[in-house]
Image 1 (tube, one colour):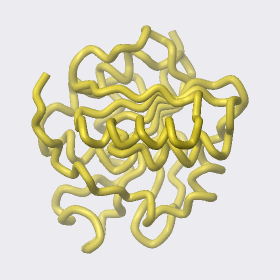
Image 2: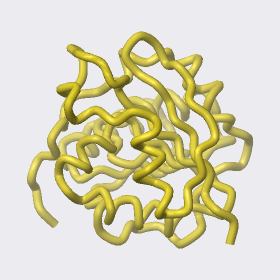
Image 3: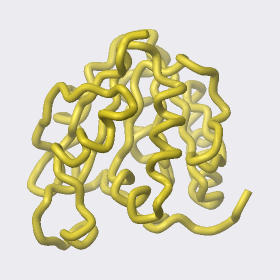
Image 4: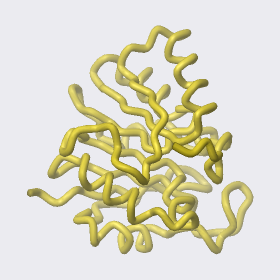
Length: 192
């Protein structure tokens, strides 16, 4: 596994998002399993674990070793038992069983995967681990000039995200505003 630092490692969009709106838009229910893919330091995982407690199991995966190490330290310090954090190249086979995930969160990372040229591999892995009818929540920067966020040229609008996901069996459901800079696109995995 490469120890290369991903494009936006160390940056987090969490402080830019309306966390209450995000929580509401994820429609989490007790007993679900969530995958926070390319989680960085795990700000979203920590927030969701705090909101849902033991009612939610979270898998937090990222290629960035320092980010996962920080998340693991935070998990220990806060005595959190429902987040499993691991280093993983998310464009390679994920260390998760097929059809094991109810909700997958991609928080401002899909545009980076597209720039890296590995988005098809990542989406194929997400498709494999998602349960039929599971939800893929894609948080992205609005297609507008920044800062904050990446250059407008690499930002992905909701329809663009839908076009990327359609070949993998994800159906567009809704787009919700997450504050002045971000939106959340919700997609549902095709039933088997």
